[in-house]
Length: 339
Image (cartoon, rainbow, N blue to C red; front, side, top):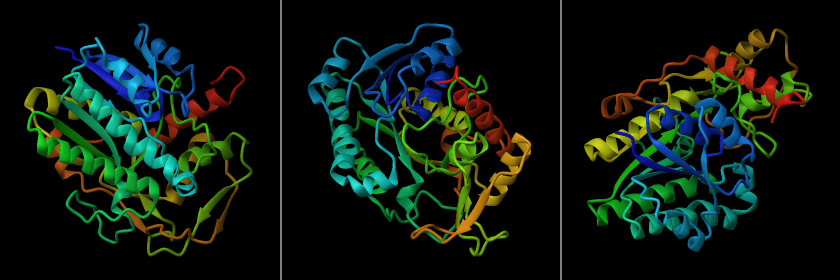
C-alpha cells in the first residue's frame, strides 16, 4: 500500500528522479522546495512523466515556522530529505550559509517531523565524507574524514540523525552515501541542469558538446591509474532513485534503519567517460590537461555489498547508458524549447 511521502528538495536533480520512482512505486508524494537551486518548471515536467498533477509546497527549510505549517494536516508517513546546498567551492566561500542550509535546515525538518508524528527519514548523504582515502573499495565502516565544508555538513547531518534515532527507538533513519550521480530520465524531460556553473565531470562535458564551454579541463593525468586520470564510481541517477525507494521500504515495512553506500562498485577514469561521451555525441571534444586539484583522490569507488544485502540494491545501468541519457537531456535543455 502506498504511503504519503514528503520529498524535500524534490525539484532538484536527484530529488526529481526519486519523485518519479516513488510515484511509480505507488506512493503519494509531495515536493517541498524553495526553488533556490531548482527550475520552477520541473513539477510540470514531472507531471508529464507520471501523468498526473504534482503536489508542491514552496518552502525554505531554514524557515522553521513555515516548515511546521507545511507538515500540518498532511499526515505524512515519511520524509526523503534532499534539500541542501552542494557546491564545494560555494561552501568554502560561504560556510555559514552552508551550515544554515544543510545542518540547521535538517534540524528544522526533524523538529517538524517529531511535532507531527513522522518517524522515518531517508537522508541524502555523500561519499565526500570519506575524504581522500587510498583504500578501495570504500566500505561504510571506513573512517569519515571530510575535507571541505560541504562534506562536513553531510557528516554532521548523519550524526544528528544517528543521535535522534539513538534517543528515540521509534525514529528510524536510512542514510545513503552516494558516489557520483550521472544521467537523466529516459524521457529527456529531467536531468542534471545546475543553476550555477557545473563542477561535476559529465555536466561539464555536456556543455562542451553543446558549445556552451570551449573545452574540458582534465585535472591531472599522472595518477597511478591505467590512463593516468582520476577514477570514480559513476551511478545512473535512475538507479540512485530506485535505491531511495528500497531504503524507504526497508524503513516502513521492516522498521530497519541502515547506512549504506550507493554506487556501482567499479570505477571509470575521466578519459573513459570522455571517450564514451564522444562516441555518443559523434565527435571529438576539446580538452586539455592541467594541474591536479588539491585533495583529489586517484581512485574512489564503493563497496556495494551492504546495499545489496540490506536493501537488495544493485545498479542496472552502465556508463554508456549514463552518457546517452545525459546527452539526450542536455540537447533538449540547450534547445530554445528546453528548460
